Image (cartoon, rainbow, N blue to C red):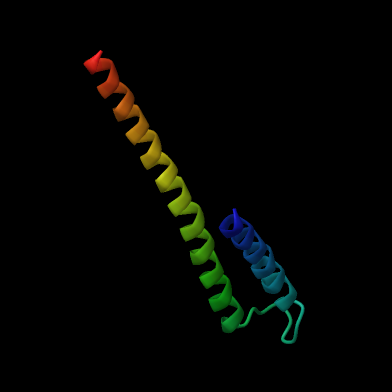
Length: 74
């Protein structure tokens, strides 16, 4: 739960930072450091959500396999 919250907060922060940097001098340009930070935020958020989805799918597969094994035994 904490990982998801931190990922969402970082995504919001990164998007706000990128949008804010458009209005800083020189206007209309986003500095490379802002893009680098936003890229790192996207990688972190992707890993948090991706790992969670992978684990959830793995648990579902194990439960399904366990149920079919029980049915074969009965």
